[in-house]
Length: 156
Image: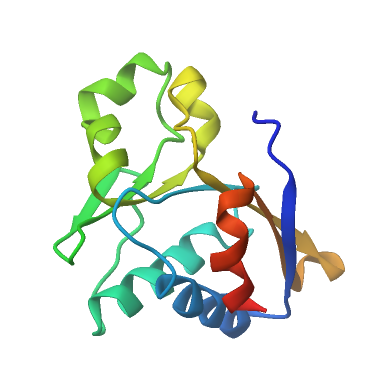
């Protein structure tokens, strides 16, 4: 867990709002950006990721959850790595995936980032998804280094 400050909070009324948030977020990203996606199952992490990836690719494409494959990569410029670390038992297993190298060259979306342990990259932005309104809506807190703040203002 980082000591980074809360930079913003966004209310997402429904699945379409989560998709729209992902599409708008896609325009902010560049090589070396790491998004750490936290939250319970069903909070919108994968839904957000799918919309973001499709927006970066500029086309509709099958974007499967990486729950079983652990990592899905997409040949955009820069490359996109979408990972789900839920099934990892120890942070040492991250090294076998090649994810550490991707942190500096690709756009990386990491679900269940607590599995990274000490391998959490500095400078990453945490998106903490949570259920609201009895599970009918979502909210997402953006937590990270202040250097992210100017780019995040475009989301307001």
